Length: 448
Image 1 (cartoon, rainbow, N blue to C red):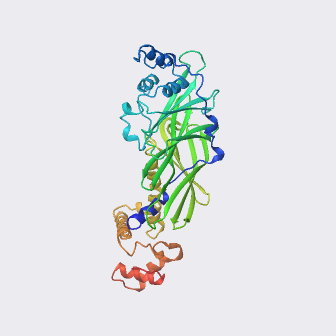
Image 2: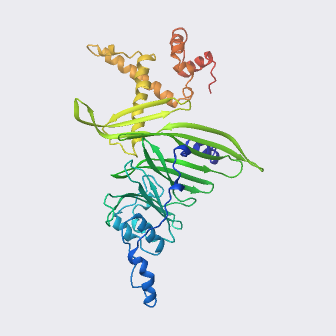
Image 3: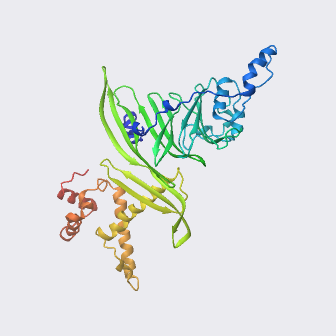
């Protein structure tokens, strides 16, 4: 959200998550479109007359009167050949906002070539209440279909209307790829506020398309991207290999202080093409909850000066059961490293369960009394135990008889370990392989 080559590739992509936001929490953007009326362009309105009065020689360049989103929309619509870099400079846009990991991120250093001049751009304005404060924000969308480029500009009207600076640019969102579909947007209700969601294309090819949703939180401080995830897509191959479609929807969204938690439901289906129709082979749904984190928190009331970073990870299985893990760390938490930090934190449980718990409860009897020796005997016995444990681990990872993990290796509660130990008292085994095969025979396990 690949058998032999192609088939294995298809099956492996089963677990790519997909996302489609449900209709009941999505605002219909069609009803929010504002008509581009009451525009004032100043000198740009008289440019055509000056050109005609001077024998076809243009004497006045198109001029943008104000930084109102409506003036900008009218200026771009009426002057398709105008240099848009002047507008971006006046708005203070010095960098591109493609977001991390975007297919457009390779163009981050090409700001001088992104939407500098439209080839018949489409310009649209929308009004939303995104910051939960009085007054709606105005969203200006500029799309260049031929260049596959799109920029969203989000404005807030200030409390001193009538002046030339009565609009504030809260932020901008860019995307530079739209081969099959240009970016689309809607809103998702989350924690009493609406999150602006932009659906963008992130991949294309023969029989392949992939789209992502980018969720943005808007407030007086600006526009902040809080989540980015695969939203929908499809993969179709030739011949008799099944085609795959994946989607997802936002089930629930909550926001608490600096933490935003989004619950997603992923869905994937496989279908096979016949001469008459497409036949669905199977379909699966699964829910998941993404990460939430915050940096620079006090450890506790007694250690206010000790600063830590907090990470929360929740996962919902197919039966709807939620599992929650939390960690504190001194590692800075960012969007591009929270998964690795989570896996590192989870690995500590693996060490606890598969190392310490095994040494203590799975037949090695490694207890604290090994530290009570006065000379070297207890230390030698402990080191011999760890050496035996290391040999067992090497065999488990490298030896064919251990790889299937037969029941007698782990089924201590049903006497497997005791039976294995008892065999040493009554039988002679020349090799460990002989012991394994004997125990497999006792448990009716087929080994190679």
